[in-house]
Structures are given as C-alpha cells and as structure tokens.
Image 1: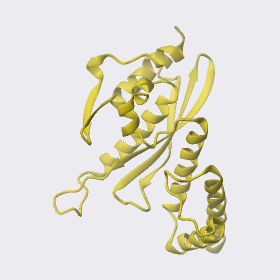
Image 2: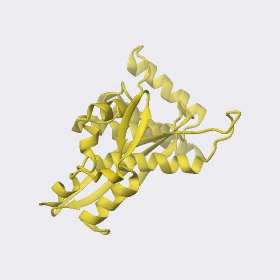
Image 3: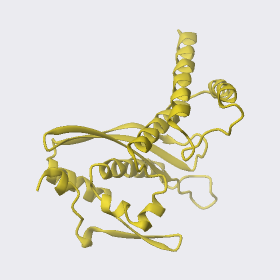
Image 4: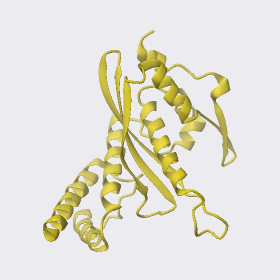
Length: 213
C-alpha cells in the first residue's frame, strides 16, 4: 500500500466525533488525529504547513478566516495544497467581549489545515458523504474551486489590512469593473473577478507604500 492509499484510509470509529447541527448528525475527525495520520504516514519531516493569512473577516467580524498551505512529499512526489477554513467567534454574555479570541484563531487554522489535508485524502471519505457536503457547502470540489478559494483567501488577506481610503478606492474600481454587479462573496466570486481585484489590491498597496516613503 503506497502512502497516498494509507493517507486515505478511513479512521477507526473510536476517533471519529459527532456534531449535531441543523438537526443533522455530522461526523468529523479532530485535527489532532489528522496530524497524527500525517506524522505516521509521511514522517514528522515529511510534511509541513504554513499560515498564509488568518484574521477576522472584514465584512463579518463574527468570523475568523484562515488560509493554510500544506506541503508534503507523498510517494516521492512533492505536493502543495491550500486549505481555507473558518471559525465563528463566541461571545460572553452581553455579546460584546469574545470568550477566547485566540482559541478562535486556532480553530480557524485547524479547520484550514484539515481542508488542505482532505485534498491529499485524509478524511476525504467523510467529506464525500451527503451530510458532510451539507456541512461543508464551501468546500472546493474541483481544482478550479480550490484555486478560487486560495485567491479568495489572498483577497481577504489584502482587504483586512486596508485603510478606509484604500477600501474606498477598491470599491470605486469594482463599480467600474463590475458594471453594476453586486460585490463578490466567497460563494459567488469567480477566478476572473478575483484576479482583477487582486491586481488592483497590489496597485493600491504599492501606492500607499510610495506615499509613506
């Protein structure tokens, strides 16, 4: 059995966890078990991950969004897979102060890492079930979808650091480029729109750097 097949093997029932959401029972694997699978199959030096971006969503502060890139050597071939994950912020009574914002950042990164690991087979059998697909409505299903998700993560990383003036400049660009269309969201954004927006983000960012010099 090669490494890819070993990565894709179902997990023992005793490590699977169940989550009740929207009246549906969903099965998932804790991130600790995902990391253990990667270590056992690839070796601790056979894989790594890097956090490309992690922060509160610029449009919905109740969510932490993370973009992770997983690098691994599988059956002698080096691969890189992106994963985009999220975690909803939990608030204390009164709804103003987060319970543990650091834990939400950790949860978003863990979710993104699991998504990246799914693309090399780890826990993929769960994502392919009907219940998991309902839970993971934003999960990329094709190479094109994965690339769009990565571009979206890069775009959100740019705009989360923009000043109000920079966001206004980006909004003006979209009004002209989009031709009256609604602003793109994670579920409606296309590769072409995100590529154009990212190019504009770079221009705006470089312009800001020139001003500060």
